Length: 567
Image 1 (cartoon, rainbow, N blue to C red):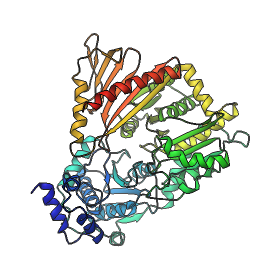
Image 2: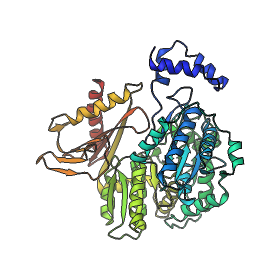
Image 3: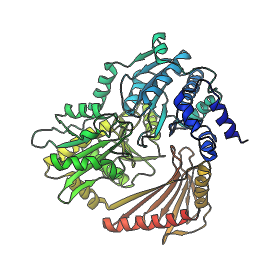
């Protein structure tokens, strides 16, 4: 009998399992493939916490795996020297509130003081609360943009950033040392009665709103330049915070009614990812009757935002890179810039951002993928007493932050900035689409693409790692007809000039990412996803026309697709 079969049998015999979970296990009796998927490993915990399908099993999100993770986090916190306090938030997914309450109880059992949001709260609001309440760590129960079958547990350090590699590895060790069934899953009533768990009051909400509003660029919004907004929270946590901030600007947004209230099934948007055009499908339908200037959509935990602008030819949805560059140009245009001012982007985000920053005399800093690295750059500036030098940070995956009040991407502040940008454009006789085209005409047409390839199953991570290694070992001097001028191995921390062989340090943390920079200014970057069993491939190209740049992206994608088919 295999190890996973033994674990399956032990779960079937566990007397504390609820009847629904027992029935779920009975349904896979004899199904060794499903048993291996559920019990072949422990659900991993990394820098993005843990995320997975909900259900019975050690490789699933359920009351036992969540409780064990919280207890492991608590054990780490007690040994860390950080404040013995934790803030917890949760989104609109099935079991999110339950998992949050279990985490609160598990931490309280260990004598840790817990501050729990009493209602749905966005991820950036949790990041803010960790620092505002001087906590040693924080938890968000959310699977971000995944479909309704998933849930997750994001963990934050005392700086309000998602955990980096070292503390995440230590927490995972503590989790693995924690028994699953030795102690019962805690009850929130007992935790509240202990006095160690309390609900976060309106003071924190108001402080967060004040912090967001302090990041206004300062465009006066009047009846003449006020944009007409259609907003969808995609059945998630953004509904109240985004509408509150927009109302502070004087904007009463129209709402996509079928996506206004929480819905863990995401019935009208099964994959609520702002990166996809499909995420705004219901908004496009609603726009036919209310005729807005802009559509704004936030993902379920309201840390990412999608924006589409009305044009004479229909709706134009901006990519994450395009919106990032639009906001960057707008912010720098209206900011006081010193030689030490900086903007921060992830390495897979558009190099167009660097061109824009240089035009305004602003430093551009590139960091690894994951907003925690942007947050880490803010922390570095803070420790030097230069926090005000951070002007803006963004990721191509629709994540943005202005200001240092939070250390994670924030769709609430981004929605506010988009409205200010739209008002400024309107006052100057143009639209966001026209402004984007002006940027392209000024700097060149930059196009980007991303290919996400799921490699499910227990062998998936090995296949992904093997593919990345195959690029590292490829001796080719050109790629898709253009000479390779530089290769960057972020795992070894080395950047190599392919002509001279000279090697320079990346000065970034080690990460299994590999990059090829080509003579025609196009790039290819590959990396494993940090949250899912997926290989992600990023393309960037620049051309004299949008069509030329897109054609180059298509060629790069075709080459990588052909290579992937071999595995």
